[in-house]
Image 1 (cartoon, rainbow, N blue to C red):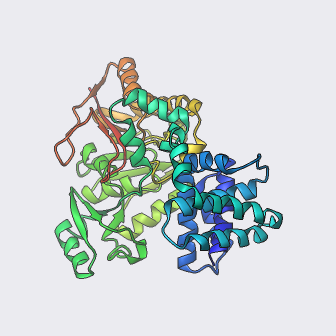
Image 2: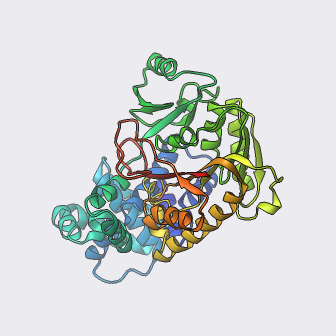
Image 3: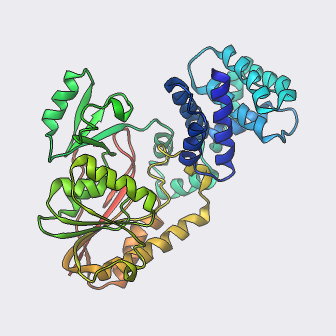
Length: 428
């Protein structure tokens, strides 16, 4: 029933706003309701993601509809979910209102039924002027924190509005063909046999026109393909590892780039990550794809705890970052990040680079990668590293598959791929 999906999603939204991870809270909520149908689970997921994606706009609208301050956070979260449905979803609008009123009782907030009914029905009557008034503010127009809007405006004055809008879109579903088991041409033929529209995005990337669960993707279980954003698929070819070389993926889990490296060349791969639970997913991906790599739980900044003293020919440093380039996949990041977090990420990235550089053989290459758009984590980080290390040379990045190169190493998000930054460094 819709009211149950609204109730569950409102609980997820409430906990995320308090500082919890959307992925973790959504997974916990679905585990707590094992009897939910696939349709209900999909609705809970959409309501949770959609409400957080448009939270900035929704909160401005809600404040304009309330006659007095609302102190019950359960009711506030339920109204947020209901306003998301009315503003951004297709469906029977009055059914949305009726189910939200019913959800109040299930929340234990039955006394708020009149308020919920009044707020949502007022929105339906006055939708256009209410939305127009709200969107006069940047926070509602873009649905991001003000500091985030201002930072992107300062760093990308010509592109910031498009970047913000892309971040509120639904992400594409892109597959990476396992070159050890299939070809792009052959796999596109398999999709055609199943009536699934798709296109060749270059390299090993195939884009599906419509998203679908992995269990309904032909050949996924057999290891023919993996799900990986097209921009993330640039990493392995950029690193240019040759057969027999020793390669380190220093922040590897859940293993998309590590698997891609092994699909392209017979290398001796060490996949490192601090999270052993996520490494289990990496090991499962190795098994599904028929790949042979070594997974180690360890911290890239504490090499003495795991390094055997043998230098690496190639190192991938896909470092922890703000995730500002993949926010459409993780809309909670917009509300969980704080301005001070960017400096903290930059310090962590600096430490990782400093330690990993010692592990790289002379003539070897290190690929620094982030899924961030903020200069502090990208160009500024690399410039500072080059200034401190006289034996480091930055190699010229290649263009994208379509021939464009908006900035050295930077791929801004668009309808085909997420935002990523790459810097290829060689030890001279």
